[in-house]
Length: 236
Picture 1 (tube, rainbow, N blue to C red):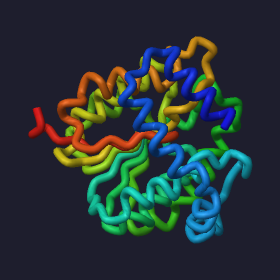
Picture 2 (picture 1 turned 45 degrees about the vertical axis):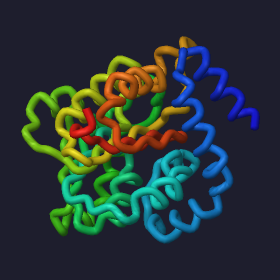
Picture 3 (picture 1 turned 180 degrees about the vertical axis):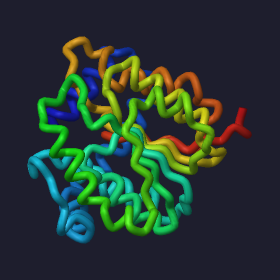
């Protein structure tokens, strides 16, 4: 409950619209006691997963939320901005059996990281090796800005979990939205990540601005620790 109160307080401090806070509260109370279900999904997917630090399993806490809301969706082209050791890529490959996944990461970290990214990148390669053998995954070692500058493809699903600074999050969201197919899904990580003391420098502020700017073209919006958005340009 302390974490919930802190999150609401921080959201109010960055002038979050009431409809966003209400959406978050609704989903929080539905999903916050689902760690057991998350562990069951984890055990079914990650039995041989290689990790530099087993305590850093942030993505695992979202597994039930994602499976609950994405299980009946058909995804062909999927893009990840930020892949780390490959947990998200393996989950999406397991959930979307017919998907082709493009993983974009610098494997050099950002402000919050103090890790050996040579080992982290090596773990990614090991973890997605079977997908690579089947030509189901495309690894691109690059900044997201450079990737988007050279990208001509469109995607059914885009997961944004790259550089967490406010300005870069907003750039990644704008660039992702531009190459997201109509009725496609945008998944944004770390909505409740409060690393920077200046609260407006964290992802939530950029995500709020993005939602408010594009709300006429949002068909579905679910806000929890992650934010899931379905795009529909026909709504404007």
